[in-house]
Every structure is written in C-alpha cells, then in structure tokens.
Length: 241
Image 1 (cartoon, one colour):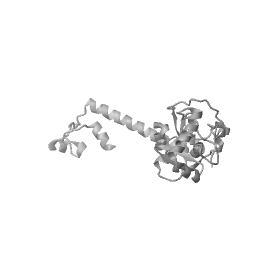
Image 2 (tube, rainbow, N blue to C red):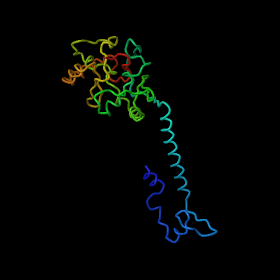
Image 3 (cartoon, one colour):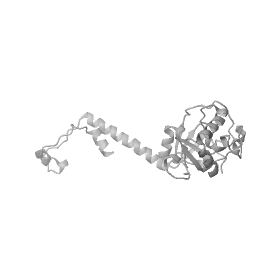
Image 4 (cartoon, helix red, strand yellow):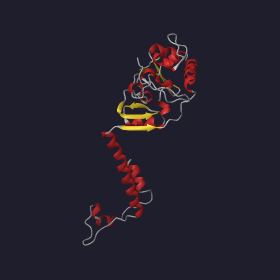
C-alpha cells in the first residue's frame, strides 16, 4: 500500500536527486542550513492535490474499519431475479423472515473455509436479501456476498435437495405446504458446479451425490413448478435437523 501511495504521489520521472551541496545545507536532510534563510522543497499545486486526495482516501478507509470494529455492519441487496409466484412467509412454511437463513450460518464460508462443517455467522455482520437476513462471520464474507448473493445463496432455499428431487423413498413433496417435511442440517452440504446444496443428513447427501444429474433435474423441476425458473426469495429459516 505504501508503494502504491508513493507511485500515486510521485510518478516515475518527477522526483530528482538533490545536489550534494544543497543537501548539506538543507535542515530537512540533517544539514545546518544557511543562516538567515529558509530552505524549501519545491511543491507544485498538482502535488498538493494528490496529497489531499490520498489523505481523504486514507480517512475514508480508516473510518470504515473503525466503524466496523465497533458497530454492526449491515448490507441491503436488491434481488437479481423476481419470483414468479407470490407466497406466504410464516413459520408454518419454514420461511419466517424474522429469523436468519440456515440458523445464521455463514453461507460464504461453505465456499471459502475448506471445512466439512458449517461456520456460524454473527448478527454483527448481516445482509438483507429479498427480505431475508443472512449472517456472516466477518465483514469480508459479508462483502463477498453483497457482490453477488446468487453465487452463495443455497439452492432450493436451503431445504433438503434430496427431499425435493422426487426420488426420496421417505417423502414425496408436492406442495409448498409440505416443505416442513424436508428440513436441512447446516452441517450437511455439498458444493457442485458452483452451487450450494443442503441436506437433512449424511444418507440423503450420499444418495443425492450418487445420481446427482438426475436428482438435480428432479429438484429443479419441483422448485420451478412452484416459483418458475428463477427464484431467489424463499429461504429456510425454521426447519432444521
């Protein structure tokens, strides 16, 4: 960062070495100076403007980090798509917006942490997306999510992908009112082709992965039959294992 500031303030070719005899007289460089005179370093209006700009940038950046260190950091994000179907938000549908998505799990950490378990988020770092609240472990993950939520938001709202595939021998979901029967565990997840899939347990995840292409097509069909092809806006906030 210091190198970047230096290159910004003093582009190559604009700074020249001071002659030795002047350096010896210059008090700024340890010389004694010439009695009765004041040594001044040439300073153009362009340099003053650059210094002012750099100082303002430093204050803005420092102010952000100071603020984020003492206060909650929140972000509000517009949806990239609209759901084609209106739906009810309630605890009975497992999508009450008063609670965080996936019990407050940091969805970005699924992609970045390399861990096999979920990473708890914090209410100090939250984003509002399609009325739903997402928690993150730090401001860095919050910033990544804010750039493009569709990358990190879970498929099928964070409900069990196997349960929605139509091939789950334990359950056949045919309507939104049955979503409570396909809960998910925040610790059971799979990232495939850049998408985050959630599952109720290890068995459901393993069976889904064994025949992923067909089961993804089945779950896509189930979800789109309710909302259309593109729906970022119905998330699991209540039903977990």
